[in-house]
Length: 578
Ligand code: TNX
Image (cartoon, rainbow, N blue to C red; front, top):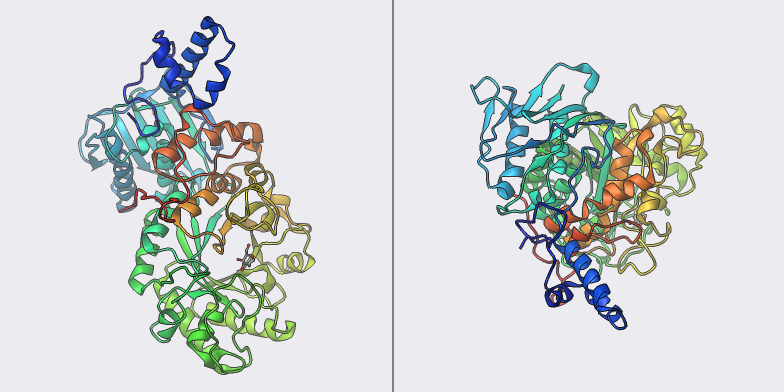
């Protein structure tokens, strides 16, 4: 039996064999037992037959348009389905980055198909057909776009860049049956629906944030989160590395930041931190998946953990005891002390040296105890340090009043859609990434009965995560100033990888669609069906998710992995990457 409850060799016909009524009754869902009383034998037989059919029928075939995020243009051709076989060969342009994407495609498909899927470069003679990944100079596809052509004879992904090929591969993956998510070989017809897709992202910045400070998540957890981002064509992972409850990255020049400042977490949870090698592993794994890591060192507030390690940074020069609560806004490094700026320069210098990406996030939120003018001066000096390192500044939108540095990204997390200070900063050429807390915050509860999460920005069901438009969200901010979207996951109440997944799915794909898909495709009714179709994929991949009542989950969606194992309090074992 397939883990999602679908038999391995499902009958090809959708008309089920009539069943022995005793077997069929046993197959009916338990809830239906109450309905048995008072029904005729014929009605019972028919109900049992339907219930059995739902369990036995193969999932509906995947259509070319069933992709999340929705592609820009889809032209199905029902006569052109392609069948992947044990003889299929993957060929890529003779370019290391294109071949790396081909290797990744093979690695994605080999476990479940059991096929060898050899990868060769296009110059190597190979049988016609198969899957080809072609790097071309097609400028119209842009930095991340791709074209996908599926015919009976073969599959071709065309792009101007390796990133484009990568996104084409993510689309291919979604077009194969959900059984492709298995980690061991299953018996399945690996059909790809025929036709063509032309696809380019709406925004260049499509991200998610993971708060590893309130609760610490180890390297393998973060790698798995990167896989989740990549599946949905997100290209930025913002790591919130420091906060009051924990400092999570080793800094050679200030070693107690990690060893002392990283010892704890919210509540009695274990602490932890990334060594330089750990962090580099995360950055490299992300880069292989066309995801850029944006590290955040939150300043000048949210710094209690740093103060526990180095009292000299504190306004009163006294190291406080660790903080394990969930309040915000009480801590700050002394903005009037030169020692603080030495600390910032050392920390950002070491982080920059380990981070190939363009951006350093300097936080800037909720420094309630620092007077406005002192705060602005502090931010300006820190911005200067960032630009001196050859990096670009990202900050929460509170840094807007600080003098402008070009280029600079403000990350908007407000809930009103109306902030004249941010709009004014945009007039001075700041650019915006939108994370409105009442739509994009993955730490908000879905519903009143969601077992974990905040609700200060309201409840965010899947529809609320999806139903807003980044282009006109903020009053006085023109569409051109918006670089994209980001979904932050704060972890005061999120303690395991499975809980991370439960809060991300299905809302992360909703935000991903806002970041990638043209507005013309925006349609809740169509989206909820497409998204629900991914339930069987998540179930098969062992990804915990919220079975949101507003989505029409297919009957083959399978059991939902539990967010937390009640016997141990820990996440169930997951399929960890690499
Ligand atoms: C506000 S939004 C914070 C975080 C909290 C979060 C909880 C922002 C930049 N700061 O410190 O974790 O709310 O939802």
